[in-house]
Length: 406
Image (cartoon, rainbow, N blue to C red):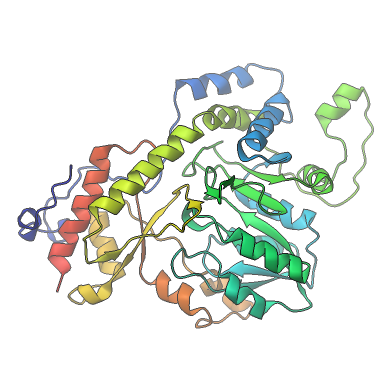
């Protein structure tokens, strides 16, 4: 399938140096797939009586909770709102500390600040780049109330170890599974492994609602708090009041307007039906990358632990700078982009962000996260990628290797 012979690339001039690019158009690292059925479902809602807080929200929530085998599902306007709602419902307050992985999208830590609490950053496991359970215990003190565990790139964390630590110290765990819809851990679907699990439905995720998120939980009281929090703290939304023929409601606690419209949820329900096929396609692409790139000295491939089935939201390679002739991640990244391969980097360590530096966080405290960040590159992976797209990525990597190798 792949034209990987040394001779075919040894003399190829990199596009960044004036050569012809592998592709004529940019291949993004992620992209949504929306078909005619999706459009029809959305149009049906647009022509209905309910554009928000209506039946399509409930339908989507029901489908999601069945998919991940959770008791409750609460849909919100985006994944960040889902994180905020989760930490609020679990009682995180000013003065509390919450342990968070040093590498994730910044929302994984921002949600702690929203509650007036303090993120305490933990280092990562070197193989999966998930939060390292062995390092968590060193960070626990009498202010520690929770752990936010991110299933980085779609690979589940070591949830049994996290659960054991949390139970021993009386902590709660929020699973940030924004990358991991469709993943499984020891035969169990990601979604009901901890007190709360959040999902994101941004267009680059496994399914999309345009923008959207959700929290799933098996706890009745937590679910009640989540539903109130997304609706200003009101105990009775408009649909419920309409059904009960009453105008009365109460604001029992401070909440936000984190509602998600029926329009978005109609798209989500339609997309959810295709999730198994789309996750399987991501796994096929990951296997193709693993096979085709196994002998490329320039990179280290991602690993999948025994008992874990990744959802492969990202396919993250690591650059072996020692194999190159003075080049590093930045040069490889720029060269691949010039070949029209839309690589990305996920993510800059959160405590390196200027806002967090102002809060007193300093570089140099997370050796695995900071060391591996310097080597990370995310390759394109999404359900509508063709075999030719995969071939282009592989060929571009070999082209760069032959140009930059020692």
